[in-house]
Length: 426
Image 1 (tube, rainbow, N blue to C red):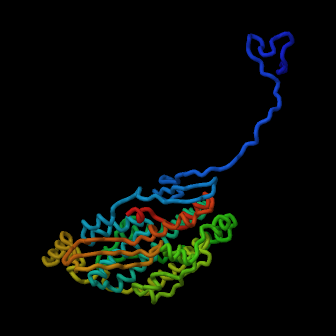
Image 2 (spheres, rainbow, N blue to C red):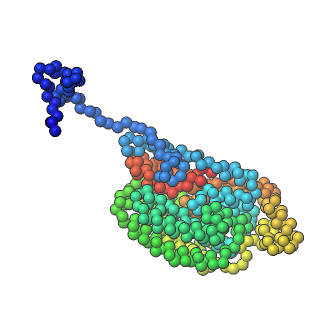
C-alpha cells in the first residue's frame, strides 16, 4: 500500500494538488496566547424531578465551579391544601389527611392529630388506647428512620444497606396492613380511640419483628459506621453549632446531633413516656455523621420502648365508652335503636366541640410535630387547623449547611436532614 505523504509534487502549483484539489501545507509550529482559565458563577437546578432531592423539591444552587455559594429550596410542587381541606371535614374525617402528609410515618401523624382534638374536647382515652398509640408511634419512628437510612446509603454509594433496610420496612408494612388494612394510608385513629382494637396475633407478629430487627440494624452498623468512604462523605460535612441549631428552629435528630438534648417525650412527656426507660442520643459536632449516629441509636431506643409497651399493654376497651364520641359496635347498631341513632348522628354530624383552641406537640420521627386546632362552640369541624411540621422548619437551614461545600456534599446534607415533601407542601 502506497505511503501517504504530505510533500508537494515537483513542478506543480504548491497550493494545488491533482485534479485541482488543494494540498495541505506541512505543519509548522505557531504561537498562541496562554489561555486564561477561570470559573464563573452559575445557577443550576437540582430537582424537582431528581432522586437525590427525596421528593418534588427544587434546589436552586449558585455555584463557583463545584463549590456551593448558596442554596434556595423552592417548594410547593406537591401542595395539597391539607390545612384548608380540614376546615370542611368533621373531626374524624380529617384523619385520612394526616397520614398523607408524612407517608413515611403515617401512624405518628394519625395519633398527633386526634390527641390535639381530644385535648381540646377534654377527652381522656383509655389506658389500652394510650399504650397502643405509643406502640404505633414508636413502630413508625423505626419505619421512617429505615427509609432515611436506606435512601441515604444510596446517596453515599452503598447499595447493600438499602436492601437490608427495606427488607425490614416490608415487615412494618405487613404490620400496618394487619392493623389498618392499608400499607401507607393507615387512618388508624379516631377521636376517643382507634378504628379497631389490635387484631389477633398482631402483638406476636410485632414481637417477631423486634426479635429480628436489631440483628439487621447491627449488620448495617458494621457496613456503614466505620466505612471510610461513608466517614469521608459525612464527617465534618454540614456541621452546625448548638446555638445555631436552636436559632434556626431545628428539632428532632437534627437538633440533638448538634448537642442539644431536647426531646418532647422527655421534656414535655405525654402518654406516660416519663415512665418508660429509654435514652435520648446526643451528638457532638452537628454534622451529617452525627445525624446518622443519632438516628441509628434512636431505632435501638424505640425497640426498648416497644418491648416495655408490649409488657404493660392492659386489657379493657380501646375506645372511650361514650356513645356521643365513639361509634357503637355493628351488632349494637343493627339491633338497638338507641345505638343506631348514635351511629347515625356521629357519622352525619360529627362530634361537637367546645369553643377554644389547642396546641399539642409530639416527638415525630423528624422532630417536633405540633397540631393546632381552633373550634367554635358546638362546631363539628375545625375552624382552623394549623400544623407545625418538622421537615418544613428543618429544610430552611440547608443553605447555611451547604455554603462552602461541594455539590456532592449538598446531596449528603439534604439527605441527612430527612425531609418529606408531603408534610412540607401541605
